[in-house]
Amino acid sequence: MRSIDKNDHIYDYIIAGAGASGLSLLWNMLQSDKLRSKSILLVDLNFTPVNDKTWCFWDNSNIPFEELIYHTWSNLEVSALSNSMNEDLSRYKYYCIRSVDYSEKILSLAEKSGNVTLMESKIYDFKTDENLGVIATDYGNFKAKHIFQSALKPPGLQKEKLDISLKQHFLGWEIETRKNLFDPDKAIFMDFDISQSNGLSFFYSLPFSKTKALIEYTIFSSDVLTDEQYEFELIKYLKTKFNLESNDYSIIRREKGVIPMEDRRYPFMYCNYVYNMGTAGGLTKPTTGYTFTRIQKHSREIVNALEKETAIPKQRASTYRFRIYDIMLLSILDQQDDISVQIFHDLFKHNSFDRILQFLEEGTHLGQELKIFSTLPYTPFFKSIWKMKHRIFTGA
Ligand SMILES: Cc1cc2nc3c(=O)[nH]c(=O)nc-3n(C[C@H](O)[C@H](O)[C@H](O)COP(=O)(O)OP(=O)(O)OC[C@H]3O[C@@H](n4cnc5c(N)ncnc54)[C@H](O)[C@@H]3O)c2cc1C
Image 1: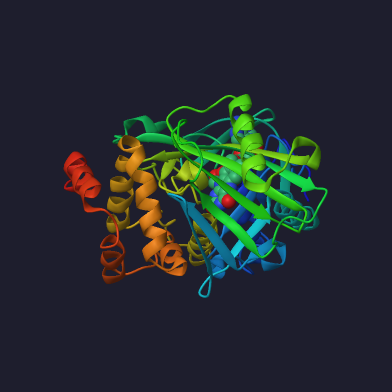
Image 2: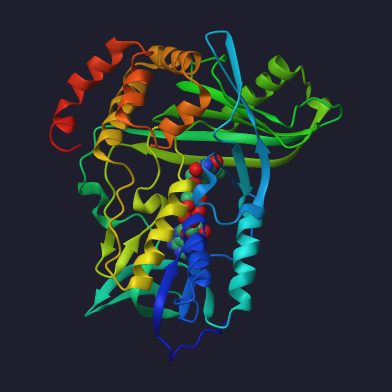
């Protein structure tokens, strides 16, 4: 690790934000024979790894750090309309990485390398100065030909077309029970058989052992709840689903978050020479909130471009076809809570879980997608096509 030299204001690359996307990019740079000796400035408010996020995903083809996988499930369960459906996955598995392990691993590699400078500072803004990007920090301004940022919302965001702005918001507890209760091989992916009074809501449950699991209450709606409201539902669920009273378990960790579910496109650049990544780069799939796999793919694409000295590819998180599907489903989620549970029910009832995950990962072809749609109620989709026609027929 290099120390901060105030006279050394120009770096080859600056990575602003050391979360999932910043560290993924850094990791890919450090793996590259061509890039690993470049001077890199990594800036974040804080570099102390925290156990505050579990990133789950099912397509591991873009995940370079398999040794970081904390747990794997091969069976998923979905419940809706009092129907419980579960399946052994064959094409995929459901994986989880803890943010604490991810940060520890990549930051320790950065510290060992001679060319990465770690700077703990607030990031205030970015601008362009002739042919360089500039980052404003507590230690002054620093420049690079390429700045990759995941810390600030891009300024052009407000100008992008926006019809639907929902949030995926959640609060979960990792609990330890006194008795063996969970099957560590089986995750509850979505359980809609709960009260829907706060908006489209479901629980998921990720067991890490027979006595430890992360149980999370998730809602798709416009307004977040108070902690007491999430916790009220958590306590109720632990009682009804697992027959757990408060003295049967201890809470060992809390996880809380809000993920945007919006139909707007995110600008590719913050300003010249400053590229957006991660959530700030619009990589979140609007209908599911899944971002982690896309982040890994995007970092690889950036590093390939830097190695070849070609232009940084404009990330298009989804093709037009999948954007249309997302816009249609978002419009249904926004308008018709009651039918949304029916759609999830029919989706999982009539299609294999592997195919659904492949579809959510945007890896299916049109024929497979039409087959999936044929199992869902048509009317809400026709209504959403009508409602969103101004987007669908103008490039989305
Ligand atoms: C609790 C939680 C669980 C999630 N689980 C999943 C999941 O299971 N699967 C999935 O695919 N996606 C998941 N997501 C969505 C997404 O993958 C994560 O949000 C992911 O962390 C996004 O990566 P990022 O790099 O864009 O942002 P972050 O990981 O949030 O990184 C941004 C970094 O910028 C820093 N920063 C911000 N502002 C400043 C500033 N002004 N100055 C300096 N530094 C700053 C922050 O400290 C942070 O380190 C989850 C999100 C949350 C919140």
